[in-house]
Length: 609
Ligand code: PLP
Ligand code: MG
Ligand code: MG
Image (tube, protein in one colour):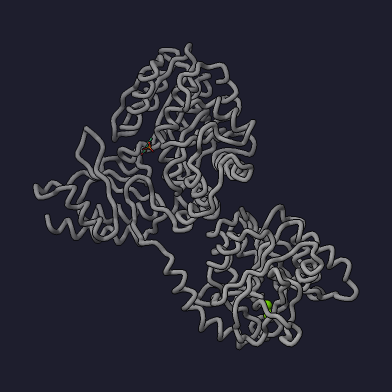
């Protein structure tokens, strides 16, 4: 798995003259987006977690890019004017910790090139193409096995031609170390060493053989001068077309999960087979648990335990594993999911009471507090966001009260996590359930339980009420072996990894702002159409909206559903006994403009009533 990339962006770009006197080459826009930003987006979409950019000339331009994309790390080559690209690469080398992709900053290219390198069996590989006739070709000479031995801009130097250097490679950390050593040994005779020369040197010396992977008709251009820029602009529509052919049909899911996902999350599932007991897959799962933990607490405070299963599995894990026989549990039931928690508790014959509250009016926290004290409860379980109606429960306030009274808190955050900002320590949540297919925007199949460390330690001796879903056993086994006890959903985990990369890039705060903007577009239409929302606005999550069925006798949910589905929108019926509603969720990889487009479908349907 390739997790890092390095972009060399220190160069002066002097051949582009006035265009790059005050700006690095990477910021040349094509199709209105700086080329280096396009490259950054392609790298993150290909599953790169961290991009190190080696800057130099006008390096401050990169600071705004790094501010926009968490996951970018900048390293300045202070001697950029006196060194070549290898000098910039050497500045980045200390931050590289594994296999990585190496790119030049002045490229436009078809993202398929990244996929090809990531899929390569060779650890060190350089991408080559057929003829570009660009006038600045770097020709590559192979040995008989197809490995790099020499590069030159002079075609006559290369008796056997493997192809032209593209400027995208995949290297092992070890190979980079050898290239840096080569540079240091040649500081005097080659002060402006280019990275491709260092690659040729280490490969020819056979200390690290670098394979040449040629794609004859690869769509790419490097931009070193005005004529290259013209060529790149001419090629750009073809790159866009090639990439658009790989896009999947757009279906906007306005049901409350599984939510709409990005194409990059979908494609993350398509990868080489792996046995999940290999160390490499252990790394993937460990990274997932660490990153999920960081989304809900400070470093080192939270443990995330993964299970194969849906959100209900995570709920069942918590209830069956986190309450001792001597415990007494209060379950708040103000919707279908609160009721489900009570159902699970009854299956396990826990000592519990369910406190029923309105499915659409805000929870009376004072009444809950009084109830908790009245009967000496040891545990309290609540749904953070009742997906039944869109009602948001005052979880931090209630859990803080529980904490002050020594009551362990168990929270179903299946539809809240990754949209609502949660800090389990600040909010006094001991155990919390969620799933891979809602606001985190991954695929269905992974259930997870977040645990505050001390709370988790305290459950060790609790009875084993089931086999598969035991929290302590699953946690212990993974800690010891970095494997799950049972077969994990491999492809869903790869998708979850990509979803986490994308969540970190967007940030949970901005994701909630985007969801809220979608919700506002919906609410505007609801009001315009004279429809009524079930839950008072102030108590809504802004993640899902329950709308009272239109009064017209002609109204049928199925008709509205079919009408919306034909236009690429999927909606969901209501789920509350107390009122007839339909529900529109606005979670997932969707944009406010798409919600606005849905509201015209709703409007059109409403006119038929
Ligand atoms: N809890 C809440 C709050 C939910 O919204 C859902 C599903 O929508 C679940 C639990 C159950 O999740 P699943 O259907 O993945 O089992
Ligand atoms: Mg060049
Ligand atoms: Mg160049």
